[in-house]
Amino acid sequence: MATASVAFKSREDHRKKIELEEARKAGLAPAEVDEDGKEINPHIPQYMSSAPWYLNAERPSLKHQRKWKSDPNYTKSWYDRGAKIFWADKYRKGACDNCGAMTHNVKSCMERPRKKGAKWTSMHIAPDEKIEIFELDYDGKRDRWNGFDAATYARVIERYEARDEARRKYLKVQQLKKLEEKNSKHNGEGEVSDDDEYEDALKVDEAKVDESKQMDFAKVEKRVRTTGGGSTGTVRNLRIREDTAKYLLNLDVNSAYYDPKTRSMREDPLPDADPNEKFYGGDNRYRVSGQALEFKQLNIHAWEAFENGQDVHMQAAPSQAELLFKNYKVIKEKLKSKMKDAIIEKYGNAATVEELPKELIFGQTEKEVEYDRSGRVIKGMETSLPKSKYEEDVYINNHTSVWGSWWKDHQWGYKCCKQTIRNSYCTGAAGIEASESAANLMKANVDRKAASEETSTPTEEKKLATWGADIPDDLVLDKKKLDEALKKEDERREEEKDERKRQYNVTWNDEVTPEEMEAYRMKKVHHDDPMKHFLH
Image 1 (cartoon, rainbow, N blue to C red):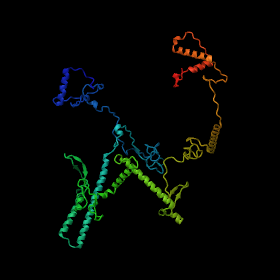
Image 2 (spheres, rainbow, N blue to C red):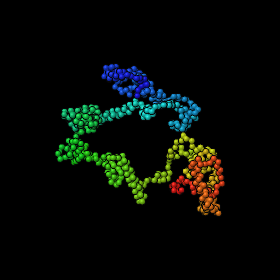
Image 3 (tube, one colour):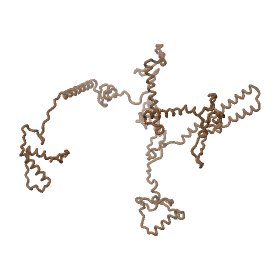
Image 4 (tube, rainbow, N blue to C red):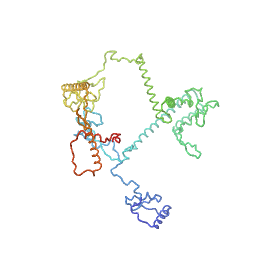
């Protein structure tokens, strides 16, 4: 796209322009400057540096490539969490009945419902919250971290560091206690040699060393396998260096085989050792426990399901196979529980017989329960439910029951008058009788209509003439008049095709005879008839 100020250039000017561009690319000439005084990279193509014609740009610029339309109303700020704007000392009209804040009503109040709200006590008035309205842009509305304060994560780091520090101190104290007990035992038995004293002092010094310097299993190292020295990934060193390698546990040649390529030893290198003292029992020990066993069962279930006709493949659709296996286990547990319930129902289960409560055994109890006049529990054995902040037991329009106390034909209503209209006026027992009589009358009318339809005789169909009137019994068509009427119909159709044959003074006879009507019907073209081309 060219700019609007492009004018005609001669061949010489065009050659000079190309030479200047080559000199700028080679660094022999200064770079071109845009409208803001910034240099333009000479290697940028012309179709990017030149603005479209409708922007009326006089000089090359990259301003049109940037976001030059910006809405100043958009903001990057966020709500001031927990901010208060005013704290009143007495209740104000229109405030929340529960806490006394002006920024919400009692139904949206987030405080605990008080026994007597601030509207009646005018005490402990809650402060007004700061309400803000922001107009966010497209990215701001969809930013999941908008308003997140990164400084709050420092508390999490401090908590974990404090836990690790307490753990290190505890381990040091425990190790020092064990060494002191061991030294006290040696002193009690007799004199200790100089070599033993030196070894104990060395152990105490080792215990005082920071634990983090001895443990390097959390270190991440690069593993290089490529010929060019490239890295194929990272491996976490999970083995503590003080532990004996698995291939050194048993140096017998005929013991368990160790594969150096995969670093695996499937058999147990020390099968005769005490299992409580063994640190490593072979890789097969881990293959039949934990998640490895679950994965093995999942593979077996996928194979069996595929053999039984299920379209499932563990490698092609692992999520589908896992969901099918999960549903299989749920169904299997349901069948087990169903069979167990059937057996218990038939034979009983003496192990699940519950003990009788003490009230039935002794016949009396010393627990006191206090009720009020309406029968509600104030204190005692039963717990009193908190009163809802919504209005309850409010009767409107002379009703004696609340809306929703009656249900019929998929509709809620009032139990007192059995009406299904929310804002209706209560009619009492008279309304119930009137509605029942209306329903009985409607049912009787429906039954009578059904009985009359069953006993009604079929009515005779009236024969209609071809022109729509009733056919008289003594109707006889004259054959000669019918032939003349057919000829007249043909002449009329020809006149319609060629209007030049129509005379100036034409007299029309409005009287139509039965023969003319029959001729019109016979000559009429039926557009829906598939055999219309073969009629005439």
